[in-house]
Image (cartoon, rainbow, N blue to C red; front, side, top):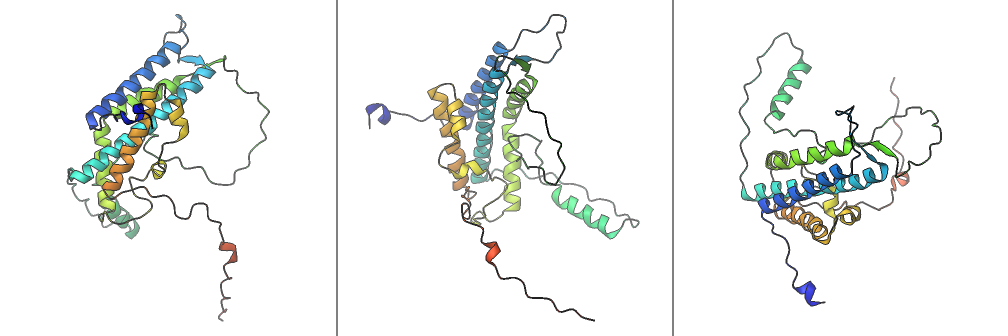
Length: 271
């Protein structure tokens, strides 16, 4: 091991310092996107931003990396709040007025809504909500063959700028997202020693020692590459210390042997 490796000092783990570094990364990506966008037409000043397709792909790689770092940071904050026990109590809600004209199913549904209402809710955000593939057997029409888009072709880049703006918005409210997640995790899993695979703070990539390679590779310099690893480690280690560790699926990679189970016994028909 070289002297350079021995002299390495990890970045600060203070939440404010991590937030300031994330803000710098987001601002740098936003400036780069603004520099690379095509000059707008003076006749259409409010038109959607455009950019060459190759640059859009490169910028989206940076957006995905920043989304990953931001989610790890919010989970890190949530674990810190759980460890410190500094969770805000949910506001009291007035009970619903009973209505004798409602059916039993409607009354039970309202009771369930009242039971879940005190839990804080999160705004929809791609970093915080999993992507669930659509199911169903819909008939698809055959598509005509399309050539790959040329990297020099100018295409719409509005989604890039929208997601960069959303990143800055979520970072400014990271403490609120973390508090909501922490309250939800404690409310649904009151026993921290309960080693269930999934819980409200579950984030599958944290089950691995290192972050995804694509995010590490997309970082523009060595300092941010190190921070990608470090923020991943912060979320992973703090969740483990708080009792909400992300454990790998013990059944991953095993063959499905359900086909070898014996058939169920036949049921006797009654007259």
